[in-house]
Length: 315
Image (cartoon, rainbow, N blue to C red):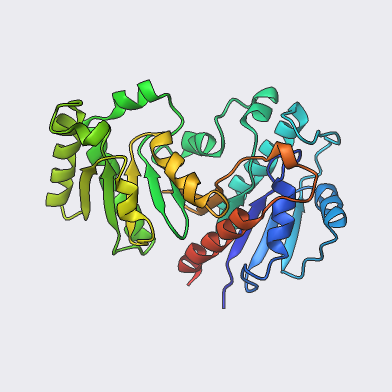
């Protein structure tokens, strides 16, 4: 029997990444019949385990990158933090692309630390999009699932992207990738852009000219997609409805309600990669780094989701 191989990257060593990784691996909530491979540093892991007084009984292997970077700083962005977290992540991606791990779970990084280390990427997804330009950023929890049409661009730029052809391509790609993951009963709910989803043109023309025509074309192609719905009520239609997935048209439209209900246990799930990639939906937690009080729930859920979809790959 083949067991999934789940890679984990430690994230920013000056944040809560190492702590929640160790706590998650010690948790009884994550599967035992999995091989866990940590891309990072023996020193960081051993110091964290000693500090937390935690013993891990899971099947783990540490790929120590033997990086000659000894000094990192707790609690704030720092160049060496960025060097380490980027190289942990880069190695994990390389191994996933080679097929040596079936999934990669990435602990939180600091975008500012990356910039201080001269890695000019706006996070994990931005780096991945350089190699896989059609990937889709989504956020999953037990209560709510959302997908972002646009993510790390300004609101002004987001609006420029809302065109019929781009929307059709996105809806079709999302539907195809969800079916590939075995999610064939999903229902896509599309947010409107304007208040009241435009109110038939009273509050904006994007719904009438771009969004509604795109939805109707996709419906004729057999995609189970509906909308646009007013942004202030659409999430009520999807909450606690596991088959319903909300498509938010820009970053904060989707992330504000998601983090309101699922901040502790939400998962960032990248759709469209040749491997599974998940991450906690929260950040580095610099304000509580090194204190041993970080909640590992989001990391635990990220590992569980990675295991769930990885089983489809190895089965």
